[in-house]
Amino acid sequence: MTIAQLTQQECETMLGNLPGWSLRSDGKAIERTFEFADFVRAFGFMSSVAILAEKQDHHPEWFNVYNKVEMTLTTHDAGGLSQRDATLAEAIEALL
Image (cartoon, rainbow, N blue to C red; front, side):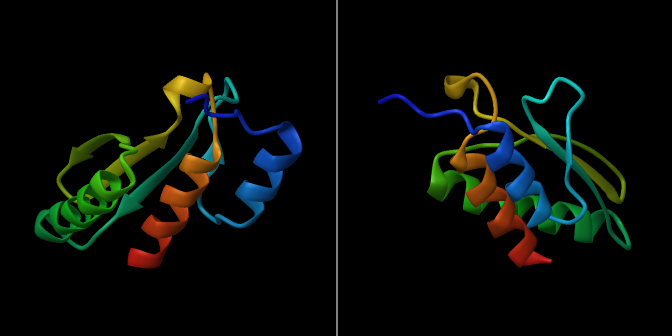
């Protein structure tokens, strides 16, 4: 199954609907840093995202230190951003 990469216009529309997310410098991913009150809340958020990601079979790249979670979404099979990234980012936003 081929996964289509988003066009520049589609990327701009997606980012317009996802406050806090930004386009990575190479244009092939979106990124966001989340900050929580403490480690437990950050880890709980990551656990919730993990469940969403597994259900969507689309997994983030992320890094966690104490109360911060840095997240990157990209679709390797598409060579950049796809609708899968937009869908997962929207679901993540709904958790907040």
